Image 1 (cartoon, rainbow, N blue to C red):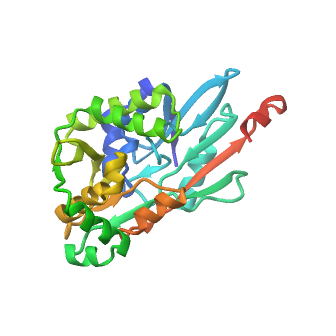
Image 2 (image 1 turned 30 degrees about the horizontal axis):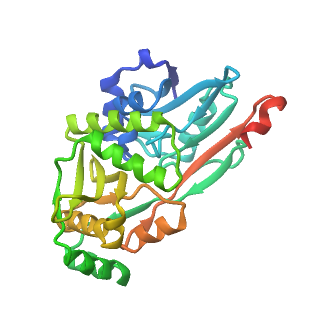
Image 3 (image 1 turned 60 degrees about the horizontal axis):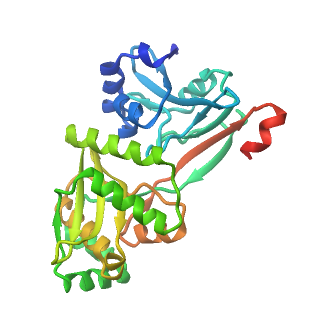
Length: 308
């Protein structure tokens, strides 16, 4: 198995993106344009003539020591391949990662399951929920929890309506405001990356901002969905206080489910390990499709403690 390490400017974008597109485990996060917009530096491992690819997002912001990390808005990377992601193939790729990377904290995709336990990694199982839509809407609705159905009835009394004309700047500003109100303080880099990703997806026909408004055209809930193959990915979402009280997010998701029902598609809810959020996604009938987070700490002793 020939695996090469290529710097960003050595990568053949059409071949790399062709591999991600046709991979049995394709994810939108693996395309070069996506990686360029969520990271400052990345390189890639490539098998043969781009039969398999493995992006390595890195920085050296910790005392100029190179480390691998998972960028914001990029849940799962790892090995993408038009071949089977066998344990041996995954092992060879992991062994090919240069030793100059002294710290790893990376999320593999959900098809990278056969992780050898003998390579000295800390392996963390992360939750992620998928709702498969290949059933009639009536069957999908029957799997909703009673709480979801109650909230949908509540929403139906508020004359909510859907629209997809919200500008990315306004959407990201609403997300940021809601997170600050919850005490979640993300760096500005996350919101800048969100702008870039949303614009790139819209330009490529790979995404849409769906909004639930009240009768006075106030935003009640909004979601940015990304599209990749059969996947409808819930990258970012937000609800106002009125929206939370009146089932606006339930209404928005239910409308999406109605529209896409009986198709060979699924909603990728993108998480979560937070119990309340996981319960919300499961209450739509979604199932857990976990993925692995790999950690490895070979930092010098005098700095190793900072990464525990």
